[in-house]
Amino acid sequence: MDYPLEIRNYKDLFSSAVWNRGVQYYQFGYAQWVDDFDHGMEYEVQGSVGYYRVRIWDDSSSHNGFRAECNCPYHGPCKHIVAVILDGMDDEFIIEKAKKP
Image (cartoon, rainbow, N blue to C red; front, side):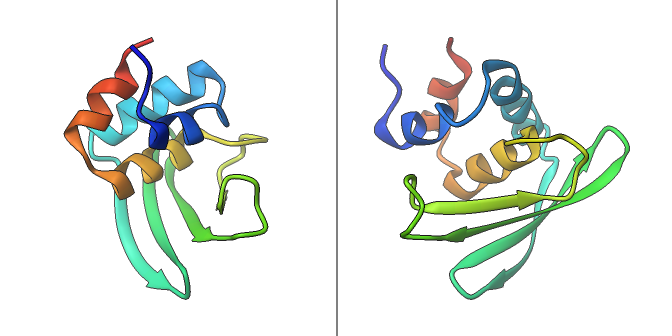
């Protein structure tokens, strides 16, 4: 079955391994909202070595409509950002679809 449009828009930005770990981090409740700021949100996400800060915000100039940054050492879109995206959506139907290959 195809993913809902919302998930397809984001899932394609990540490797399958990163996406799947991010789904697990979301399900374990590792992503915790910290604060809102102009057009975005800041989260703290539990990682394997402490906590990382993730900021995600609207950006109409980006091809996917948002930008995100994480202070973890991974180079590229990371599992912490996936967990934040899913927490922001927080829809059981979407999460169930995200778990399927």
